[in-house]
Amino acid sequence: PCAGFRAPALSPRGGVRHAAVSRVVSSSRGGSRHISFSDAPPPPLKAPPALTDGVIAAGAAKASMPASKIVMLGIISGAHIAFGACLCMMVGGAVPAIKAANPGLQRIIYGAFGLPFGLLMTVITGAELFTGNTAFVTMALMNGKTTLSNLTKSWFCSYLGNLIGSLIIAYLFFLSGVMHAGAATIATAKVSMPWIQAFARGILCNWLVCMAVWMASGASDLASKAVAIWFPISAFVALGLEHCVANMCIIPLGMMLAAPISISTFITNNLIPVTLGNTVGGGLFVALFYHLAYKKLPQSTPSK
Image 1 (cartoon, rainbow, N blue to C red):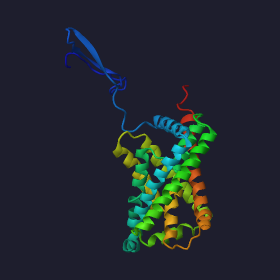
Image 2: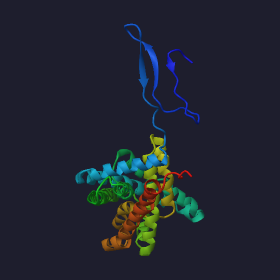
Image 3: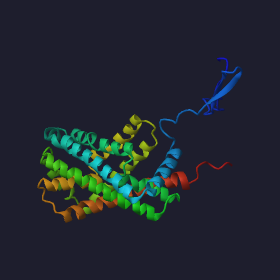
Image 4: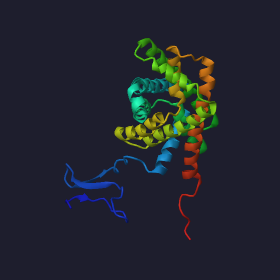
């Protein structure tokens, strides 16, 4: 060992214990002094209990924001998701030969390009997405870190902002002329499924979306966050599941491109059941389950 350097202590199980490291250096006036170095940098991915605590803290912070800020960040997030939805339709939705010959491959292309990058922009920039808030803010409420009124504010304002942002991008893409007519076919299919089917697809979709945001929140670098987001989001799109914020762009854009859909049909046949399903998926199957696992159920085996 080098002179003047105090090595970090080893833990009883081996490995380096995360204690401050210090070394002795010469002082400009003679003698010596100790300089302490901070603990090791945070791990690339938090352990599950710490990840859950981070989600609770993030949910509380989201709920405490002013309504105007949530709406503004919601508009930004709605635009991000809409960009992703449009890219998804432009690429995966425009390969009819591949779809006919190999429908599975077409679904992978449809999921891989688009929505993952939209959610990544939202997560990295701190924008507000309604579907993610159904898990994060719910966790904060379950653990006494926010109030029901703040949860309602967060959900309503982020949903409103997401709708505005999505419609802005849908209209701009309509004006741009770059979107193919197949977007109208996609929109029509989304309002033609039975109500219960749209509801169930909404549950499954937001289970995956919330897991993407949950895992990304525990990563400390951009690459890790991107990986955490890409797999669940590409999966939900490839599986044909339903995301209410993405549909706020996809279906109105299809209507602008002459899809035979009325506003009432859009709302009753898709937006309502998918929104309710997304809320159940995030609030029940993610937030409640993890709350029980890490905050309510015993965390260790009692000694005999």
